[in-house]
Length: 179
Image 1 (spheres, rainbow, N blue to C red):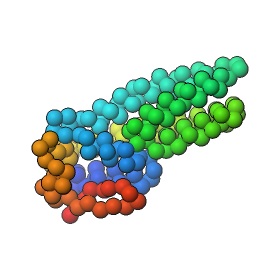
Image 2: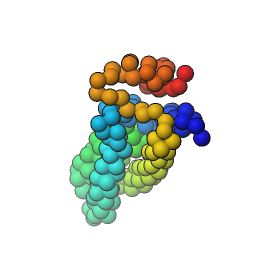
Image 3: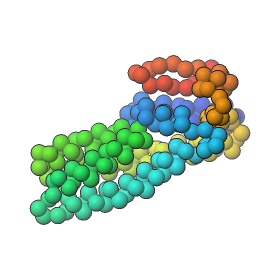
């Protein structure tokens, strides 16, 4: 597969993740922070999120098993988890967290349990999709395709022009595609 096809596949996958609501503009902003000095910034950030989120999910699951259920404690755990999810742009996870918090505030144990299962499912789906995305990035780099990182001395506009990217706006999300 040639260099540009590797790049196009990765860009298509990112667009798909955005279009399907798995990710939002926060993920794009993370990618824009990535540069040649730290080319694995986004992957490291997402890996840290998943390592830390295991603890949150375990705490929530344990608290759901308590009798009586401590709804304020659950609400606190889920608020933290929702904030972490927002920081990487995990839209579907964040939305399920919001639903969980609403059930928590209504002291609805069944709603919390059902929604927690959805949170875990969306969390697992996104993890698998992002692992594939980062694997594509590694394959692209191994094939010698151009870096998506910019150097510290290059403005984004210069970088986009240099890499022959075309910018366009769709639903307030900036996508980058090869001309």
